[in-house]
Picture 1 (cartoon, rainbow, N blue to C red):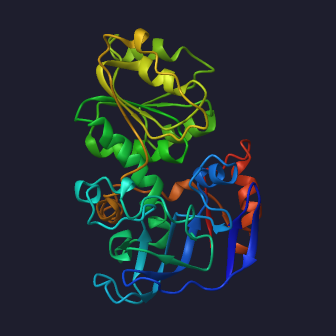
Picture 2: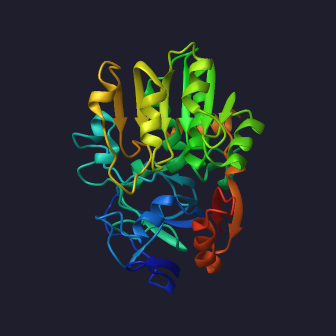
Length: 342
C-alpha cells in the first residue's frame, strides 16, 4: 500500500506492507479520508520528542472497518467509523477518570510512535474505544474532524467551564479555534469573541456566525476592546488556541479575575508565567492535549445539525499528491484551513 513516512525533517510517500491484526482489540481500517494536522508538522520539525522516525504520519481520519480482532465486540466489518486521535485502553487509572490523553497503555500513538493514517490502511489499537460508528445521515467528510480538532475545540470550552450567558474569548481562528467557537455556541454564551492576526479567518468566523466580535491585534488594542465589551471586567473564559509568540500573555491579560484560561495550543517555545504581575487575579490555568471523550456526542450534534465543520476543508488532494499537500499546509500565505486527503 502507499503510505507517507517521516524521517528527520523529511517526508516520503513509499510502498509499505498493509498492516495486520497484532492484538485482539485491534482493527484494520481502510482510510477513506484523512487530514494533515499542525502537530504532524511539529513531528517533522523535531518538536515531539516521543515521535519515532520512519513512522507513517497522521492521526485524523475516517474510514471503513475491514478486519477486526477477536475481542472487538462493538464494531462490525463494513462499519463506517471516525477515529479518535488518542489511543486509549479504557481501563487504566487515567482512562477511568476520562483523562485518556494520559492513558497508561496509549496516549498519542497513531502517526507519532506507531504507524498512522496517511496511508491506504491503518491498524487501530484498542479499536473498541478508539473508533466511533458514524450515523447514517453523516458523511465521511462531515465526520472527518470529530476525533481531533473538533474534540480539541470542545475540550477547550469544557476546560473553561463555560456557562450560559458568560463571555468567552477564543485566541486563534485556525481550525481548532473555529471549532471552539462552534462548540461554545452549544453552551449559549452571551458573547463569543474571536482574536487573530489573520483577517481572512476572522471574517470567516463572522460570516459563519461563529463569533459576535472579531478583533485583530494589528488593528486595535485588544485589552481596550475587551474591557469596553465587558464593563472593564475582562472575559469569563479564554481559550488559547493560537500558540503564538505573545498569545499566552494576551490570554491571561484579557481574562477577568477568577477566570479560567484554557490552553489547548501546542507551543514551540517555553512560555513565561509572570506570577508577580498576575498576583491577585486568582486565575485558573488548564492546559494540555485533548481528552477526546465526546466523539459519540459530537457525531450526534453533527447528525442533528447543531455543528457543521465542512467549511474547514479548503483543499483536497489525493494520497499520491500528499507531499504537495504538506507544502501547501505549511505555507502561511495559502489561506488553507484543512486539507482532505482521499
